[in-house]
Length: 218
Image 1 (cartoon, rainbow, N blue to C red):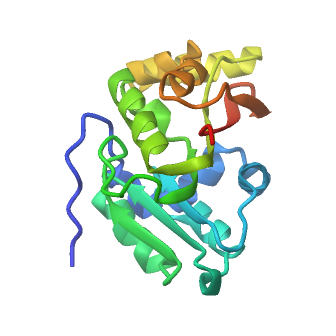
Image 2 (cartoon, rainbow, N blue to C red):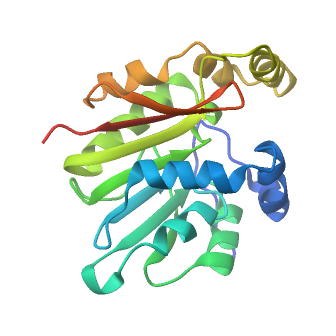
């Protein structure tokens, strides 16, 4: 059964689903394992945690997180993506009772308030315009429990010449002003505006990707 994509003002990568698992390691310069490990260590999932992944793609990060969860204790990770073909691929390749995938827009989450212990997002926010960045962070805040954790890895202010070249070239080559927003450094401020504590930058990759961690006040 074909899963329809969800209407959104952000970019969906339906066309990339068949080759996404091949392209992502190349984009991460074959350091995907180290990159994912850093995100998961920062998230620090506990066996009974309920975790939400915004913009999950084909679900590889969700699968790695699910290996650290105990469904007997209620542990579960849910990946959402507006691209229906991504969700189809994720379910086929990595779906499990405690590793679930739903077609959904991050700016309009179909979850109750306080549903999750943690929210994570990897390389999603440079695909959505400023308005949706704001809305999706407010939604992440809403669905988190008090004291819940937020980890975001995405394009940010470049810190090296190579990072600046890649960032600015990507912005103009792919005609994505959303990338321009990221490399101006808007994400930390938007997290605070959504209600989160001031985020910490816990890691930096390739001179232009930063990993941020923050929490919802208890």
